[in-house]
Length: 236
Image (cartoon, rainbow, N blue to C red; front, side, top):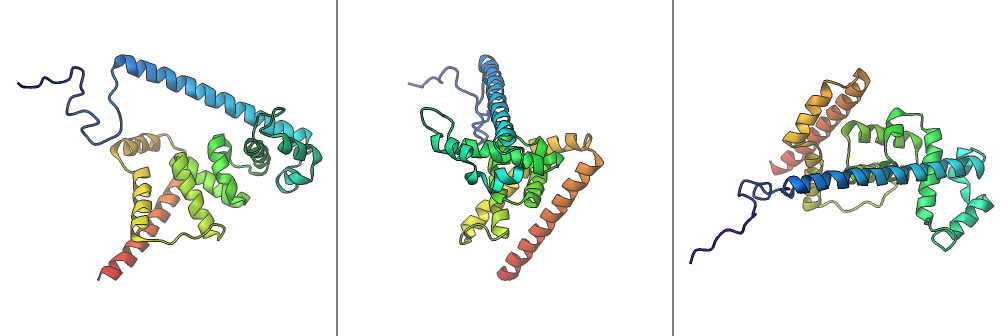
């Protein structure tokens, strides 16, 4: 007996059949998703606003609005040291990592007068903190903003910058690891949807942003040509 098709099963031409992870939603599910996204963004905004507010308050009232004291000598401050000791406990549910992130971002907001840095959300700013150098953080912020990097892509970029600066443990490079890194880089800027977004953005970008992106793309092209040259030379 011929089996009937499962009712409601997506057609063979949907996103699943195309080999993507994007599910096919019906009208009701799309409305539900839109509401979930809206509420999620509201939650993120509330959390970020609260952390920024606390960090700025701590910088002003605990460290006398001195970013150097907050960044380099926070452990010498008895009030801050006691806050860290209580973090995650019954009198302060906020954990020590969030305390540190709030304070460091507030301090760097004062010390990095750069539009790209100011426009980043807290999550991406946190990912840039390990760089520990204002110049490198400014450079990373500009790249992140110009290319609209995801958190994962931003983390990968910071890891690469730390390796360049000799601050990260060097991981042995193998063929598979190189392939994965190149693939991630390509996927971050490839695809019809992304290219269309860039096309629309190109019509609206100011001259300064355009020059910055063009410089990064030229550097990316030069790096790709260098890698191609080395790999092709070995193959020959």
